[in-house]
Length: 93
Image 1 (cartoon, one colour):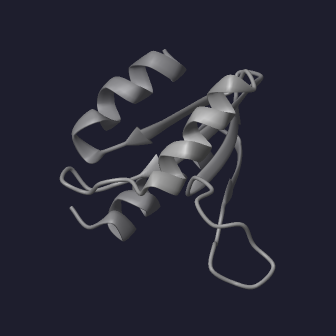
Image 2: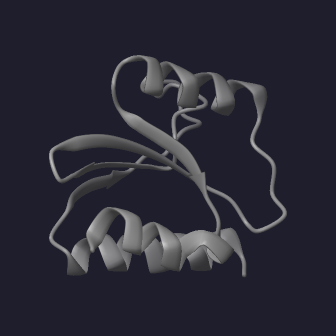
Image 3: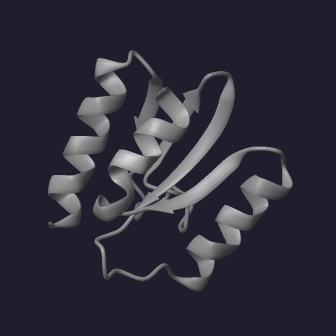
């Protein structure tokens, strides 16, 4: 599954659960690079969600930001299509 297709699926799910979220668009002169693709507040906890295909790899900067979010008390991780159902069960059931 292409990352863009998976992204739409994740965002549609978050919307269906009425979860506050934002799709972070990096790459302009005013945005920070390496920020996770989706920022969300799930059950009162900040989540930084880096979306990847089942074979995609995170950059060193993305991994750094995931670690910094965790160090700050939030949840941050790489979410892949193969893990989507388990993710929904963990955070929403």
